[in-house]
Length: 157
Image 1 (cartoon, rainbow, N blue to C red):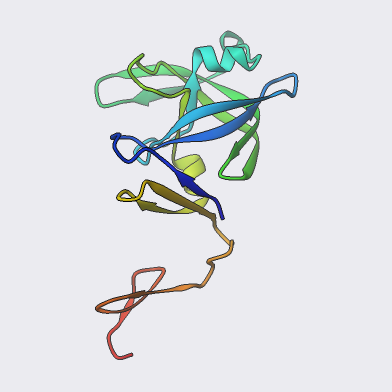
Image 2: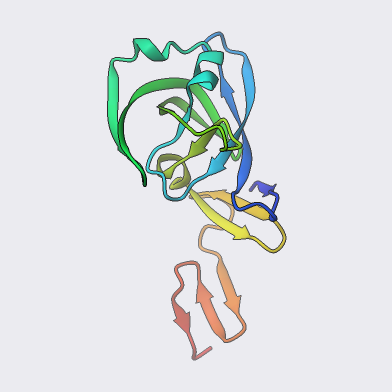
């Protein structure tokens, strides 16, 4: 179960991922954990650097952001390794991220929903457990009573 440190002084959670280029070579990427994004996506320059011809994409998707609505290409990434798990032939969006975003891309719901995430902002730690992993069925104890992983409390114990 990976424990990933992040800079707690920043307003974003930035983690590392490995993407494999079309020719098979791995590339280390910095990606934002974005719980508000539905899909995972990367900058055009990042995808081109991985040998992906973004302009040849036959699929697009309409994307609504907080400030605009736009159409973006969807391409397949051969391998994306996140939190120690490989996603094969992963459809990702080609995103026009602003230059102020300090990342190569964002991890969205399509990837994040495969993990149970625990964030400790005070210590700057993110724990990512794949569903069906080590903590399956574990119980967590709260000072005011017992609670299971679903948040159900039992005050009688």
